[in-house]
Image 1 (tube, rainbow, N blue to C red):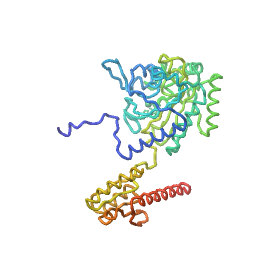
Image 2: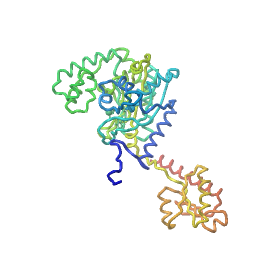
Image 3: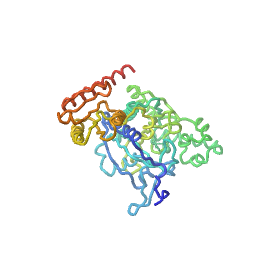
Image 4: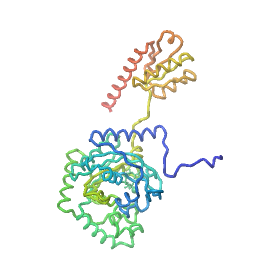
Length: 428
Ligand code: ATP
Ligand code: MG
């Protein structure tokens, strides 16, 4: 085989190593920790579904359905599609798995999603999402809880400079009236709009508001806003009051719409100016019509999704693994002792690694790089006495200890480090 035969990755996919993969996992771990604080259950759903699951719920005219889906003819299931998002698959499972019995159901899931888009920074063909949904609740408190969950997640990830943009898409009545007003407004400027928007004008005029094409922007910005029915006004008022009570600041954006057809009432986006055009990191809203579109009974629901890659890019904390103890055996006999010691340390929950080969100074350097706060050196003398040389790498202090005393010394070092961290946080 020549070098030219080496397979290349599928365009728009990523393979991650080390620090990048750790940052990715840190986002997932944080999500999992925070969802427990809010009482969300974990679920798992398939990576692919019958194409109709997405086509029927997301809307035929949306970008995702009209051009971004990865669909295949399968041998026994007809057309199937790799999930471009989680919500539709969750709704399908809600109906086919009898999850109605759990309603109102608070669920969390994460994993890969697929969209046929032009790859660029923060935009991939296989990307990964965190997803949270409350299904079967018409209570504005559900919206507030979800938004609080999202806000706390971003906060715990240490992501700063994020704004919560909030809007209401009204109920069916206010939305229909608004739709008619938008068609009238855009039809008056039809010739000046982008080709995409001219296509969308009658089918899905709300999407024009969301257009990134500069030709559309002036008309999108001057478009009429929705006149809310009393009921929709009341619902939105309760969401805003709940956010205030939770101390979550938000900016009302009357032109915020979501790309998909199924949204009603609350729509929101957490946006940052730090990722260029890919600034939306977490987005969602209420979708009171979606379960019905799959043949279920009327089931109000609200949810959000966040791109793991975009969140990872904003994490500044160093989350790479570090070891606490480096074990340096001198000679072959000491190597077995090193295995015994490293096994004991790891069983005690202490991250440790053996550095067996190379000159002593080199090994010390590698131990230091791995973040070790102590070196455990085992030579012939120590071996004979059943002890080790314990070196505090910060102070340089060195003493001979047995294994129990070594564990205690490591404990002390860990405590010192924790105290130093806390002091630094208080000072900083
Ligand atoms: P955008 O306007 O950036 O295309 P979207 O409205 O299509 O986003 P959603 O369908 O709301 O996005 O998906 C929720 C989140 O998933 C987005 O806010 C983003 O963080 C992430 N996301 C969506 N598409 C991609 C992609 N192709 N690559 C990476 N992340 C993505
Ligand atoms: Mg998109």
